[in-house]
Length: 312
Ligand code: SF4
Image (cartoon, rainbow, N blue to C red):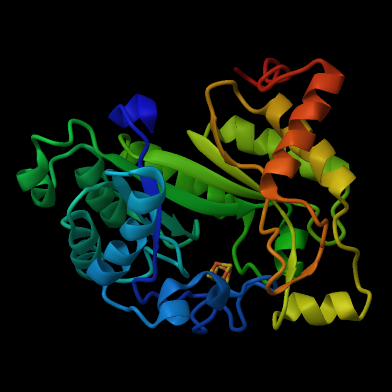
């Protein structure tokens, strides 16, 4: 963000009132077995529902703590392209029109995107959207990111966690995004240590992700959150929670195989105690990042060292 804007830009999470085709029955019901959207919904946590109010509330914290002056609207909760294009435009316009908002990230499923939605996203990414008219002096180049939940390339795992989409839809979403929103930044989310996946399977997903050439990735470990379907399966002993050692190893593998220019947005999932049943490693995110960094040092490797040979 410093390279992009000359200073940091802070992400403000939003709940724009979307639902998910995996919850409302159009693809499936019950959602992904690990999904607990309540846990990351500011509206449900705070009772604030207007987009402008959510943004304002978020800004206060970063202004006070870091002297922040630039922000990104992060459409995070549920599936943030799951509506008609007209409605998406209203919501995105509302967020981007707010003071000091210089871009956005849109979290969504790979099967909830199409040409019309991507053309709309492209208009924000290339700066042509009308909402930027009053901000042209302050924003030379908006940052607009689409984040797809890829999670795994293995459809058997996706079926087990009730994703209700296959890997072919992730490939299609990436191709469509490059074609119809070429100025948008493309992020893929991957999950390590999903039930019954071996390290070799996870490495296959990592290599496939690298082949798809996202602009950035978020690499999470799987965690079991209370009141989810997965919590019940875990209580039955159906699978084991990831160990710290395993995730650190896989995160280092992931970095080695990612092209060197792919931004790394995250390397761990949720580690806060509240609501997380397992794993409970008792470490902060920074301590886990340090463990991954130490593992790379131990190996004498770095991001992209194994990328050549995967079609670069
Ligand atoms: S696709 Fe996302 S929002 Fe929908 S059920 Fe799965 S994790 Fe939850």
